[in-house]
Image 1 (cartoon, rainbow, N blue to C red):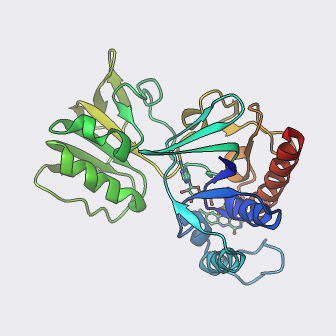
Image 2 (cartoon, helix red, strand yellow; image 1 turned 90 degrees about the vertical axis):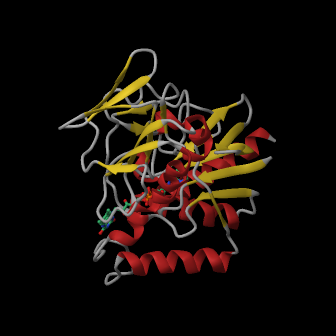
Length: 283
Ligand SMILES: Cc1cc2nc3c(=O)[nH]c(=O)nc-3n(C[C@H](O)[C@H](O)[C@H](O)COP(=O)(O)OP(=O)(O)OC[C@H]3O[C@@H](n4cnc5c(N)ncnc54)[C@H](O)[C@@H]3O)c2cc1C
């Protein structure tokens, strides 16, 4: 059982990890070991204290060096669900699962909003996880919508299982190929069906299918964590980064605007301190 699991390796997650390490906690940091694509994206950052001329790549390198110096390792994983077990949390990453007393959610925000029908059919023909659900669609026809090149590997895995794949990449430079793959360069307008998802509506055609995979670098927190309270599409938190679930904290872009490094770093720090207070009270 971990003291804490941090989900997400952006500015908020990195900051939380450094503070938990300094406080001697037994924690797991889950996400992309190359950190968040967003950290590296900025051409020039003018508002991060003490580093006036830095660009996104420079900040990313500085974060990675800092983690290495502190002896913090990131466990590569895409979290697919977090479950409140009453006193502890179960964190699911495809086939792997972990148990922890507290969680810090630092998953950023996904620019692409859920398509109409996506949340309605989640778990009924719509999946966010290739590793968890891919085998269910062996030999079947699926639609795969992918928001980031970094998730293309998961789409490849799906195309190795399914008989037919209609691939909708929402990024430039898609390279998914194969005799069973057909690309549509459009975003889904709706996912429709009766008891299960049965078709995806694009602007110029409707594609009948057995299942739909939405491969995103960040899933809506309410879909990831059943029972977690949201407000205006963000995780609802107080000033201590506490959510409505005891022992569950959130930090960074996922808690709301402004979407900025300094705010994410600050909240990561606050969330880590709140974790320490929570653990001390629990003893
Ligand atoms: C082009 C661009 C320029 C910017 N310029 C500036 C600037 O100049 N100044 C400024 O202050 N801010 C800037 N920002 C905003 C800044 O990048 C964000 O505010 C900051 O990165 C937020 O940090 P975060 O940790 O909350 O989220 P993110 O950096 O988005 O990190 C979230 C991480 O969680 C991961 N994740 C999501 N879901 C899961 C899951 N289920 N399992 C595991 N991992 C998951 C994601 O893959 C990602 O790695 C810019 C952003 C962009 C895109």
